Length: 462
Image (cartoon, rainbow, N blue to C red; front, side, top):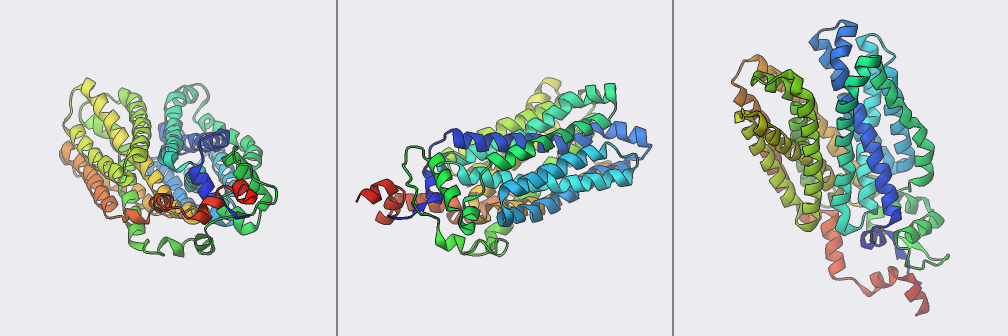
């Protein structure tokens, strides 16, 4: 009887309840993650007043989580490929839930910043894990759509903050928006019990029974015998012990650097707008009271952009779709610079959300699609972590430009320039090295051994 290639089984599977369970957990975790990251922005005015601090200190407090997310994405995402994704997911949920709640107990900028930095480790760490988990178990033809659907949860978390923070802060104080963030720790036992480990990790650990169970859930119609041998791609599994080095192996080095550059420019646009959109709109003469509506429209646009981009990415070449999204983002920002009509402004802000934050969510899906399963969490983690350099630079750079009292249009042009650089970076990536491209090439010319491996019941009878 031929071994069963579990990687191939997952790619050829049809969406079922098992995929739905993974999708549920990944979406829910990123909704919580998005809430925890956005909560400071909503509460910052009340925190500044309560702690009697200036804008400079407040900026450091708000930015402390970004340093944590950068380190968490790089190191915890990489560690997930070594100790198992459910365990690392549980650790990340504990970190961002407990320490975000702990920030509500502080009464000075230093202790608040420390709490937010530690919470940021979990916030950043869980992003590549969820990307890798959904990407690994998704049917190949649905992979981009499912991963972008997961990241749509990130924007839902931002919307929840915008909708609930004002009422909660006014009635109970800013601390309560942080206390609420501690509730997800009750999910940890359920995550550990129901979320599967990665296929590569189970193969490395020799967990044949667990792999057979996963194989039966991936393809319920395929009768997997109790003595079936579960296998993977040996040439990939042999490289699992050096996931960081293998980001640059097999000709992936230049493309990896270009993915990092794309992430830096994408996160630059997102965090420049998150930090300064309200201020820039005020400079354009719009009321600050409309800021909440702008945030909601921006995030709704991001969800539509991510889901629409995922659908397009599965139907067409995802690399070309992503390049187009970066270019549309740059053009939308130019439009935003010259739009003065309130009615038209909402449509433009929607488009900006779809083509900046939506583009970045699609970029996560693209990175997850590019790297093979055994280094996927590491690849997405490093891209997300290195990309945070753009997130950290953006508020400072745009703040500096605003302090120079330049015309409003030039501030938006600076943000738009990042979109053009991101488009150029993605266009230089070698798409033939992507995991999905290689999988499709394999499926066009399957060998007899591969066919037997995917149907052990038939193999046994012969």
